[in-house]
Length: 132
Image (cartoon, rainbow, N blue to C red; front, side, top):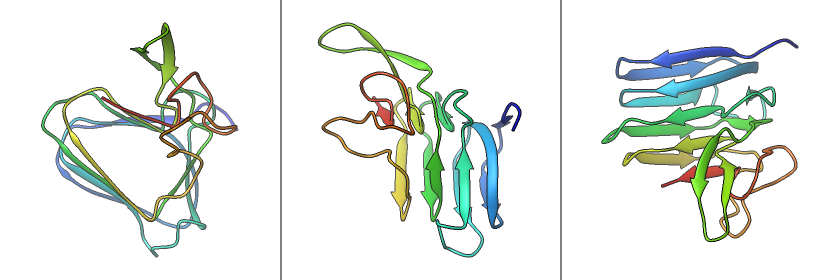
């Protein structure tokens, strides 16, 4: 495995993934839906290859949908001030804007709002999903 593919989506639309594992760092700059073709997250995996967030949203007023996917091996790359100090955040999804993120049937260790950092979404506090 080498570096993940980095792609910025500037146009609104729908991105459908076939079965398989895709090594990606995606950036959404328009209204988008990311989904698996067959609706089974166990067969459609987005892997960040421990090299940045799998999905970065840093544009305001977007609607982002993520359906039927597994997100794994993201690495927190954003910095957020918390009550203690600055930490890396957003291993799976980093939303650094006022945008709407909708998740449905998304697997992976990314959403435990008490402690978001898990073994496969590395970084500091909030590394699984950072939404602010």
